[in-house]
Length: 319
Image (cartoon, rainbow, N blue to C red):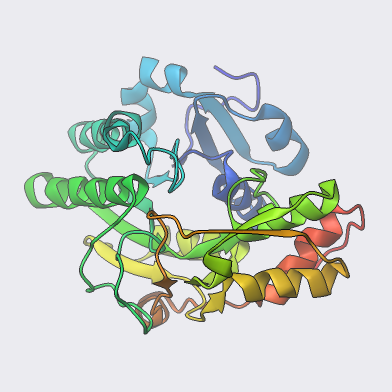
């Protein structure tokens, strides 16, 4: 087990807890005094010790070495883990199944066999699962037609939860997130905001696919983790699915222009053809989340970008 804050009695298990969204969630739980245990292939102990309290960590191997005890004591399981992004398995789409779908399905199956009362919250991808052909905000009942292996994997994991809900009474909810941005998005190759800010710092060009005409729904990762926490505490999950985003559409090129305005920098752009894994339009109708959870996105995109830029450029400020 990790040396970091060992705990055998955490009621909340967070899988993928030191990735981008996991870091935001751990900080959120720290801010509200909530205990949790992060479970990851390689827990980021340094991050947890520096930025959180009441958050213990556990390697994936150690969890599976004693999974029955951890699952028996848990009340909530939040699943954020993923080893891919939309373009990862473009040329090997079948790899999405063993790398992401199989581990999730095995874990959820272990949950219902060990402690079926656990409340599972799964973070899916509203930005990739609905498919092409939309021009208005997309509701949860739209057809699921992913065009990337990543989106396909998310759909299959969703279906594994529904299967276990039907056959084993698994208590779960699914959050389909749009395009979150935040200070812990450390991968400079993922997400136009992180890519552009990293390029500005390193004085490198960015690549715009199809001139950046794709429309996306951006919102703050801190708003996302508040939705995750609300969903976990919801009175009755019953396999509900909620879109989580701003409900507003932004062209990629306009987001780049906003970043240039905030940073007072012009970034060099390399224009290339559109990729076949990218949708032209992906904006979510999030009215159900407000109706059911009382949740809506509160932090504007400009504020999010300013907060990230102030942090990574050395001007550490708080909201």
